[in-house]
Amino acid sequence: MTDTLPIIDFSGADERALTDALRPDNAVVRNSKGEWILLRHRDVVAAATDDITFSSAVSAHQQIPNGLDGEKHTAARALIDAYLSADALAPHAASFEKIAHDMVASLPKGEPFDAVNELGAHFAVRAMTAWLGWPQEMEPRLLDWVQENNDATRSGDRKRTAQVAADFDAMIREVLEPRMTGSGHNDVTAQLVADRSLGRELSETELVSILRNWTGGDLSSMALCVGCVVDFLARAPHIQERLRSKDASDEEIDAIIDEILRIDDPFVTNRRRTTCPVNLDGIEIGTGEIVRLNWTSANRDEQRFGDPAAFDPEKNRPHNLVYGIGRHACPGRLLSTMELRAVVKALMNDRSTLSIAPKMTGEREISPVGGYRQVWVVLG
Ligand code: HEM
Image (cartoon, rainbow, N blue to C red; front, side, top):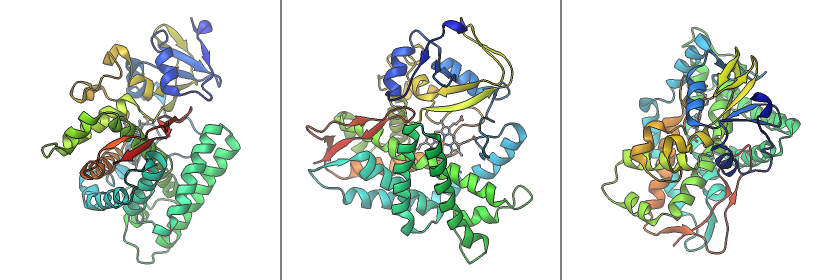
């Protein structure tokens, strides 16, 4: 069975379209690196919730908490979750709303704009620097970095991705330096520097790793999520109408956003390494193999959702995997939800309607990135 498994070259492909085509006939495929890609909801959930068989220790680099297993992971998550709880984030809600409002107010009216790069990327950087207390002057460098990070990821060139990662670490060290020498900062980054919840201070390497996992990839993810949500809403005036209605609660807005992201989930995969032989749907996977949980595909599995494109927040909510499942499920879910809600509310409160820009086609991203590279829309 394993010998006959298709080997798929994902390079240059729209992962959503490709996995849609593969999933009906294949629960698992292999990519050109020899990794095993799980395409169906049931298998992805099974692997994500069995962290004994599917270890997260996949990278040679320290990744807190992403690369940790067992008790070490539990301790790291307790530390991190405290910064991302509803209570910890509540004081930041007003600033996310103001950033989104100001940004939407500055968008051209009646003229096309690109929701990924002109709105999503800028908003992601501004909201993140506001949350962490990083200097506003860093914005242009962070925006350049998001661009370069996406280009490097797409290129698959490991030297280039390593350089991009090193550049980001250097920026984080710059922010840490004044806070580690104790010069009167009182922001989330300074709180992390002063954190002793593990019974000791965090080393600089640990601080960089935590901050990298809060920021690096998520700046890109947030920009891509904004692109997917805006594209969907621009094509769905009846949902825009619902979102504009006075009685749309925050819970309903959040459920609508989550369902849009289920249909088009730009956060494509995460890796695991098997700790023992596994049999998945009759396919034998040996010990020490890299397995990719494809969230984008699992979120569209016909066996779980029926028609993957059928918009039904109520029905699909319990099975939505946009933020993962199991012990590694996204600790930043609440933060992302607050930020995306702020953007959607700002767009909907602006009384103009949102529509796809005539004669300008959006461009899909290519593997390993998901969602759109560009989404051209008009507020008019
Ligand atoms: C923008 C939308 C986002 C999406 C769609 C997303 C999605 C995910 C998913 C699917 C996972 C599971 C990974 C796995 O099982 O291996 C995850 C983990 C993680 N996310 Fe997010 N995320 C987002 C934003 C954020 C934000 C804003 C933060 C932090 C501020 C964040 C921090 C993390 C961290 C640290 C992990 C690793 C958790 C662990 O290993 O225990 N994410 N995210």
